[in-house]
Amino acid sequence: MSSPTVSIEGPTSTTSEGFLAAAKSGGCAPSSYGSSPTSPGDVDPAIWDKIKDHPCFSEEAHHYFARMHVAVAPACNVQCNYCNRKYDCANESRPGVVSEKLTPDQALRKVIAVANEVPQLSVLGIAGPGDACYDWEKTKATFDRVIREIPDIKLCVSTNGLVLPDHVAELAEMNVDHVTITINMVDPEVGAKIYPWIFYENRRYFGIEAARILHARQMLGLEMLSARGILTKINSVMIPGVNDQHLFEVNKMVKERGAFLHNVMPLISDPAHGTHYGLIGQRGPTAMEMMALQDRLEGGAKLMRHCRQCRADAVGLLGEDRGQEFTLDGIPDGVTYEAGKRQAYRQVVAHERRDHEAARSEAIGMVKATDSEKSLLVAVATKGGGRVNEHFGHAKEFQVYEVSPRGISLVGHRKVERYCLGGGGEDAILEGVIAALEGIHIVLCAKIGNRPKERLSRAGLRATDAYAHDYIETAVSALYAAEFGIRPLAATA
Image (tube, rainbow, N blue to C red; front, side):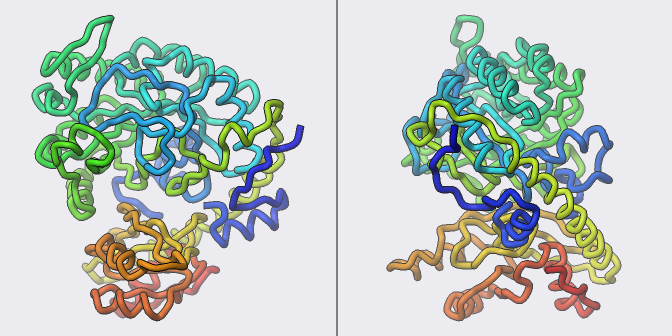
């Protein structure tokens, strides 16, 4: 059976040369202090082996590997004030939203189609659009089918944790070694402001009683996973005035119970989304508020700073979504798995990662050797591969790196509307991009026109394409050297 007749960007050659060229150009989409591990030296070798190809659990891996979510679990047992599960929605990029709900058999067909065409694919996750553990039979059936066809794919689930303890043993039996739990509170009084109700053991609970039950079950599930060596990532939604200060307690408690990563995400509360918080005008945090909170959490549980708050049917590298290229009506019924592209891609990535790690280590060493006590925030336009390889006008997000005597660290990202649309309204879009880059000192991109460069300059933002296709850390260290009068590194592109 032939591969699905869908168009998809990225490497299509199964040769090493083809993949390497794509890696350098970005078709195959740093140092961190207290954040997600970036190299084998950051963690125990056994743990590195688990996370090295998982784009959510390793910041370094997210430059090279893709995830896929299948929307097989629509039922949910917890109502969150920030959530509105939407079906048949292609225009919103946030958790709980999907275009197609799938049966386990349909999910298998879609996973095979994606694996054949997206060689970066390494992880299959079930993140709803409801709760993967509450809709357990569909979750389990999907994993059983997929792992028989693609045995090397990593499996992970995302859950609110209410019934997680009931399924830990089965998760371990299926070799699911990555689980994400959304934990927004450890104080039921705070929880009552976030969760109107839960449904547990055939009964609906409300208010503080609901939050107390949910908290106890989340802690139990986390402890059980930790005892079995299953890595856990804790997602927390930062809700200004509700739990923003309380997240220090969340971070402390989940660390004590063995959480591997803590991912603090901004509340998304657009009224158009129809959530309770959106409708009552509860605001989300600014990018600078998010960064400030994450900075203050350093020293506790390790932080994930590269999350993109993916849809429940997301496909591709973090920061992109190719789900609409793999709708069921474009996938043949009898599609069969072909391993060649994924195998060839992994060989090339192994080589590219060695080069990247050497460049990264050199860059960080140079920055740490300086006598400067200053820091820079650098926004990078990148398509992946750990390089400065995206045109300013084509960027839909910028990755934000902080460089200081402590090293070079990815500290977040800023989503923007694409500036170059080939039509009207570009001035307004550019103003929005400038607003999104609040607090940034320098913008790195593969190419930028004179007009946007001049407008950025008037707003106090410097932009340069002088480091096009360099590794990000090499470019950032060279900027730091130029800024503070120290010897720059040679380019590596």
